[in-house]
Length: 522
Image (cartoon, rainbow, N blue to C red; front, side, top):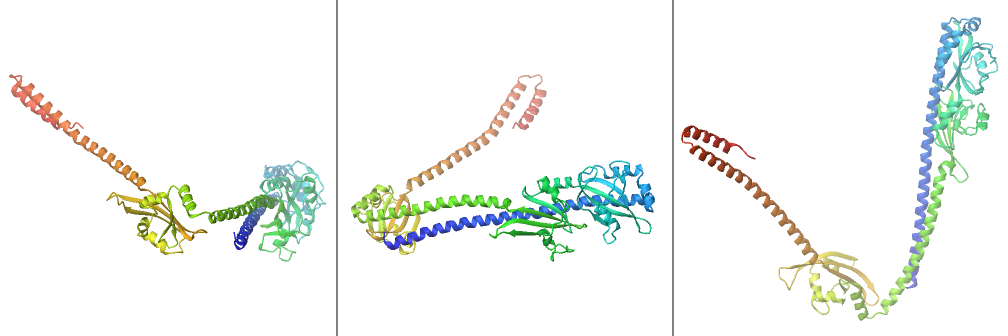
């Protein structure tokens, strides 16, 4: 093979290898982007579910606290002394215990006086507990705080369970504060819900107050989880998603999802945030990069191995092809016209021939082709083939590389009998003859005759079945007519054999005969 063609083949081979690796890289990148987008949607759904659940739970606690303030007014508590006295009665304790019921998220409901002393408790009665050190007691005396206060997470002094309290002031007729109604939420129930609904094991769902105090999250480690509850975190990326200036949350949500990227500019964390409606809270979901990068990395490793094996196969195949082409060229250069004709005869059972580039002459033809033309070199078959418009168009158009058609002509030996030949041709370049046309002709006459015989046999079978059906339909009414006639003759003969009752029998026989003949039997 010339050096120029060898360089062209090598260039094509390496271009194919480079294209293969480009396709594999595109597949990996597309899969990674799809995986990240999918986990972004999961994070967004997860944080919206967390925010909605939190709102529902705090709505339930707030409704109970509002009911408690109405209970205090209904009991007639119009002063601090009346509040301590009336709210410490047993029926108030029973009413609180009945109101919170068996809700899995509500842990406790209590009344506290202005000094921070527990006056009534849903767990037991009487209740004597000092709660003056709690942050919701500070809310009791702070007029700048809104109507509803949400405390930081604390451990219950009675059960040691972690609670978040929703507090509302109890006021007298003039608006003075005489006590506090608080409802405690079980953080363990909220934690369990977040664990069951989180997008993945490596994702963390958290609820923060607007002052960046962590209320609850679903961290697996109990020590780190309880150590972080109630802490204030100054740098919270989820807070920045909701707050454009980084200091206060806006009234409307402007964005709730983002990616935190590392040095390689690949997202190693997905952060989503959402506000909790009607409360100074927001939810945040953080998904670690190990969750959504595991599958793309595995896919990249698998495709790398596949790409390496395919590259080796392509390179080795290209070398083998070049070697085979060189060997074939050398063989053709050393092959005479006689050996080429013999090769055509041995390699193909069909009628094969090598034509000139314009299709006007035959260079070589095997014995089957010669037998078809009934001459020594097969030249008599060429005008018949060229008479076909498709073959003629192929011969006259050098730009057409191949031909595939069916050629029909009348058999010269058997007039009225047509032959069918499947003709295929392609333009090639042989070192021995230059540009030429390699043609193969396959006789399909016998196959088409067999198909025609099968179709004709099917038609005859169908015609026989139809004739049998028509004969049956004609024969059936004829048999009925014959049977009715025989019955009539029999009745007439019986009537004539009795002379005494001839007249009666004759009339009766005629009636029966008429009835028999008129009765249908099919």
